[in-house]
Image 1: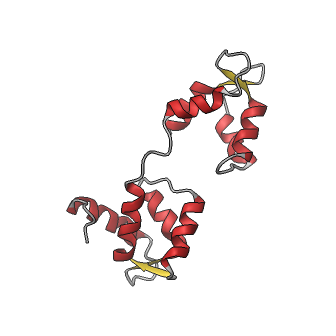
Image 2: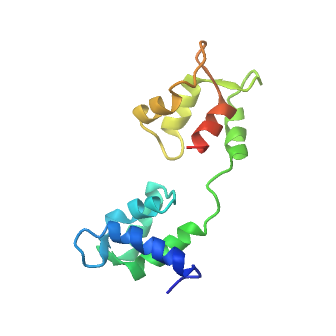
Length: 147
């Protein structure tokens, strides 16, 4: 049952799982899969969570059902490195000076990939724009990835 995890790690996962067990029956609602994974330091997309929830075919999951789901997310490669994100934003750096306009960055964040809301983008951009409305994208990525 340990899925190749140490007893200590399984215990940590079980503790987090149990925090979401609102009925006290040793199970969680499938709608809570993403929340439990995030509480355990994983970062699944909403699409990934919906797929796992629909694939499991149950409304409630036991810890034994959840553990392989956790393991599959924990074994995935990092969603992206800082360098990869910087390279992706370099495309918008027309002058090659390490900055892009906040308007372009806002557009990218609200329309590509896992889209952010305008309020979420406002939070991310707070304090990142210079007086000309530009963002140093390497510093932006570094700030975001450091939490």
